[in-house]
Length: 293
Ligand code: AMP
Ligand code: MG
Image (cartoon, rainbow, N blue to C red; front, side, top):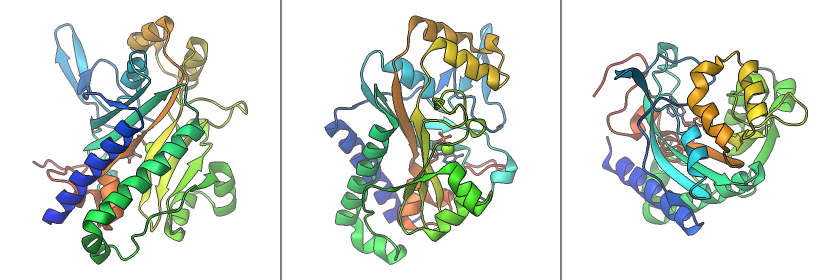
């Protein structure tokens, strides 16, 4: 691996953290094992460790711990190592690892719009700092590199799908020259915890899509926080409420209203440096379907 890739990755992590601290966030330590983790909206192999009378799951994302942490502090972030034992069909996407890191952040009482604005500024700030320090190297490997203009374009999921067909996300990613947000994602495409819109069909959520075909780099949204709505959403997904008692107990005690997102670090570095795959953006990369160091 080129040593410059590691320098860019390290600087990106530093500058993202710096930006968020300047915005009043605190950094939390990651949670690696818990009986409670993200159910995800796609199937992965189970990563569970039996322990005592129960088990621990390896963290797929810290979504629920973020919600609980907001009781203590209103703006939080974590460089969160996630283990998702993705299936072999994802081996050649260029976007999937089975161990990756996301910059996971959450803000009490925020709206989706607050998070869109924050993410735009975070990405622009980080890219500017990377350009200042590594501009010559970045442009030598990525002739398309430029600082995107804000606000990023907002594209409505269902409108784009109707116009361009089911491959719309990749088509738009290839066609655009700047990152854009895909918003109002349909309920069946997402987990239960992103907030349902008044239309009852789409969520108050978003993905960030990188241009030049690099695809999704961030997902997030406003969250459900009221017990009756959460139970309704779990039932919609045919989830067994008994399996979710850890979470439901906490929701009964009250969790704050919030919005937030997670930005994949490997995918961000891949995008900035125009790398063929996320496996080129970190050391000890593990592709789906492989055993690797
Ligand atoms: P999600 O909320 O599941 O979309 O995850 C948040 C972000 O983490 C995504 O937008 C990606 O940038 C990143 N991510 C998710 N899954 C993977 C994976 N298997 N490999 C690398 N990055 C991932
Ligand atoms: Mg996503």
